[in-house]
Structures are given as C-alpha cells and as structure tokens.
Image 1 (cartoon, one colour):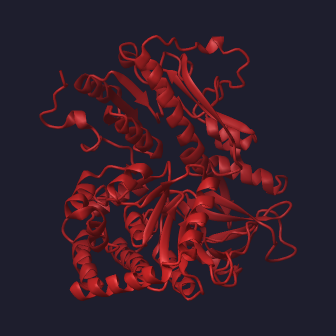
Image 2 (cartoon, rainbow, N blue to C red; image 1 turned 45 degrees about the vertical axis):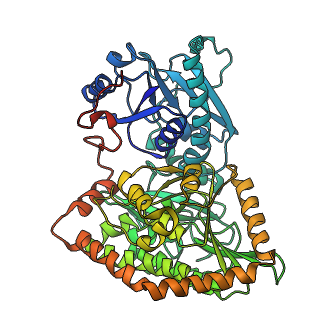
Image 3 (cartoon, rainbow, N blue to C red; image 1 turned 180 degrees about the vertical axis):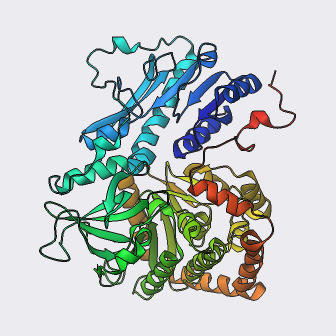
Length: 575
C-alpha cells in the first residue's frame, strides 16, 4: 500500500514506523504538518491508501479525514484525550500507561479505536519513555491496525463503547501545574515533576535568583554543601550538573535554559554562578552507584582472567561536547590499561551517541572554532578505540545513535544493537556536513565503497535489523533493555573465554599494522578535516544555518525531499 506519514517532525517514532512499514513492503512518503494546504497538496500528489499520523500538534483538517482513513497515534490509554498525555501520567504517578491508535474525526483524540497497547510506566524522564515504551507500543499497535485495515472487515470501536476506560479529557499541562515548591515538595515529587517535563518544555523555575527552565534530574543519596542550606539552594557542582537541596535530600540538575537562551549543561548555562560552588568530584571512573549523578562510569564482571570491562557514558540526548569527549577519551585510555581482554562501550540508556554537541557549539563565542575543537575531540576518542590493540572492543547500542556517534561505534571491533534502536549514519542533514570520526576508513571496509556512498547519500534511518543485514552492525539483539544487557554480557563473556582469543587479538594487531602501512589514520583524518574546515570556515554557511534552526527548534517550512517522495520531480502515482 501507499502510506503517507503526516507528522510534525521526523522524530524517533516517525523514523521507526517508516522503517518498519517499508520493511513490510509498503510505499512510504512523509509530509511535515506545516499547514492544511500543504497537507492537502501532499495527499493530492501521493494519493495514499492510508494516512498515519505518528506525531501531531494540531488536528488533521476535515478536508482530509473526511476523504481518507487517517490513523492517529496518541501516547495515552484508551479514552485519554489532550496534548499532555505522558506529562499527566508521569507527574501523577500512574503505574501503567499505553498507546492508542484511533481514527481522525472532528473532535481531537475522540475518534473510533483501531488498536491499543499497554506498558508498565517506569519512573523515568518523559523523553526516555517516549523513545522506548511509547515507540515500541506504538509500532505494535500501528502494525495491528494496519492488518485490520488491509483485512477490510474490521469495524473500529467508538470511544463511547469502551465502557470503563480510565482515560479522560485533560487540558494542556501548564507551568502552573508543574511548579516546584522546594520547601514542601519532597525529592520524589520534584523528580516526577521534572521527569514529566523533560525534553520539552522543562519546569519553569529559578537558579541563583534568575528565571530559567530546568531539566535532567537525578537523585543524590549524600547531601553535599552547607549543613544549614535551605531547600532550593544550589549546593555543589560536578562536571555539567548542579546539586540542589530538596526538602528531604538533594538532586542533581543536569541542564538549564535561561530566558531566551539555549538548553545547556547547568554549569555552562550559569557559568559564573556555578564557579563559586564547591566541587563534588567522584574518585576515578569506577561506577559510584545508582544514587548519584555520574555521566561516565566503568565496571567489570567475571573473574580476573576472564574479566570484561564495561564503559558507560550517559550523555544527555547523546550529544558529546569537546569537554565530554576529552573526558571520555581519558576514561577509555584508562580502561584499556585494565587487565581485561574484552572492553564493551555501553553508551547511555537512550542514546549511544549523536556526535558533536550542537547546543554547546551554538552557545560558543565562535561556533566555528568550537565545531573544530569538538570534531577533533570526537576523532581523538575514535582513534583511541581503533588503536585498542590489546582488547576486543564492542559497541553495545542500547539506545539510538546518529551522525558521528554511529561511526564512533563502528570504530569498535563489534557493534551490537538492541532491536528497536534507530541509527542515522550520515551527516548531510546538518547543512551538508562531510563528517569525520574516520568514517572514510571504517565504513567502506564494512559495507564496500558503493554501500558507503549509498548510506551517506540516502540519508535514511536504519533499524537495528536493517543495519545488521547490510553489515553496518554485527548483530541485532534482544529488544527488551534488560534482556539486551544480559545478552551483551553473555556474548562478551564467550569472547573472553574462547580459546582462539589470543589469535584474534594477534590478527587484529596485524591487520591494523597493515592498514596503517597502506594509509595512516592521520591521512584519513586530514582528508576528512579538510572538508570539515570548509563546512565550518568556508563561504557556504549551510552548516551554521542548519545548526541554528536545529538548536532553536525552528518550525519546519518544508519537508526535505528525501522524505517527501511524492514531491520528487517526475513523481507519478503508480497505476
């Protein structure tokens, strides 16, 4: 079938649904929901058999839903209506939530129901739940609804016939419903409020007496700072985060957005004020426990001779600033000196890496200089990984990866991705960036020169399964996060216990020496950076314009042609 995805943005759910539907043989085209007239034009051009709306911020016009079946993905349980479904569920401590696929009608979110799926609601950030549980449930529910649509005899259930549905109409959650009372709210309540607003819009608050929005909270078990401090006061700093007193403890604030500014690491958003706070550093890279904030953490499993090292780096939204790259390289170099023969880079729970930190770059005095510093620091991490001659290295992707993060992962000997993960191994969407991280060395060896050109030119996301099939990754593992971690640990233990491990390491070192003799890594780097220098400092401002609009969340004014196939020159509806 021809299926049009009508969406506010090409977010993780839209990417996943598009890839899953294409995998099942459907012809997919995508249109951003910019205006009624634009959506009407897309429908007229593509003439879809079905319209699916994974992510909308406004209603589909009657001119479309009265003529075509339009399936809306709503991140709420049956009967839930309104634009803040997840926000209310998280803030009010629901134990279970779900996704509903319903048909568009005059009243928003009130049409007949085609499918639904439920899941336990974790105590986690809204953005994390959306990328994981909501996306997984929505994918299953849409595929079920699609089967029913194709069958032709299914009658969707009117909302009024759903009986004792828990859901109800709830308004847009305003900042008045999110406000934190630092003197009355306990830590758990503050966490729920911040989790419910994480990603967007954040919680309106103040830091150091200045209005801001705060994001990215993490509980702290040990109270640092002045014993006589008051709830709401900033107590200490650690890397990019600020420790803040609560009524019954403390928590870390990872990111903040000052009025009219960008969302940034909290200590960068309030740099002069943060500098006056005491540091609360961690000792080394070893994991300090779950009840504190730690963005880079190392741990080992197994006996001395069969130990496996695991390096975690939990960077918000997968963005890696220059400073974070420098620290990660130091952690990786330290881990390489540990007595382990297998080293697994776990990344973060929601993102493995998305490459350079565009928000920090945008906020710099010279974005061009900071871009240059950041890409070089990313390259240093990639080279540290490529040159790990004494370990078999694994990139274990529990979360999504994009741009330079994909190629940083490919610098490992093995790449294992969790089913459900989306990869975007290309750079061109950010103003025709050429890219670095030694991709010109790493990628052709995996997928051939022609395959590499296709990946970089097509600019399409890959599911974990598709990435394994074309050879970009080495395996697609269990979709459940806990099962994935268990599977990764088991596979790593098998590698370290295998009798051929010594021969594998010897062959790895010999292969790297041959490659270096044929063409040094420095040559690949210099060639890539020659292109990147033009991106950063050249006459074409495309990268700087694209970055500015990306970090400022500018509304889309058109749909990129590689997504909107119906707008290709010469497009004709198949007969």
